[in-house]
Image (cartoon, rainbow, N blue to C red; front, side):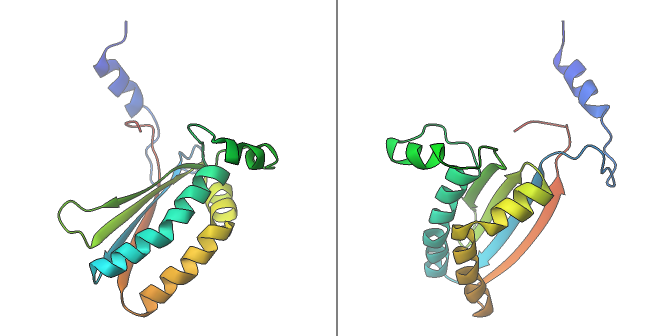
Length: 152
């Protein structure tokens, strides 16, 4: 029989080196945004909604496929899930702070090739770039590779 401590111990046997390139976990981006006003934040939320929907349909896994989407999905050439999760969250302490949590199957294909070339993402990114240039939002982000420790 396996106890919780056995599971935790097994998880610690993985190579946690910062330079481990042999067995990379999912590629993760955490993008933090600080907006100058609620109006700018709300505009961002309007702009990112079509991206979230597009990512779900073309890169992610739909929990259920509405009839209107089933035709486009059946004719899609991409059946591989490259975006494991894509979530927008608003701070519980400061409504001007948003984080976008993104998880991809891998960096090279899932993120760089598939996600960054999505039509909705490209339209969104141009709008957001304008908001950045106008000083309406400050964006900082970090990228990571998951380990085998913990779960999602």
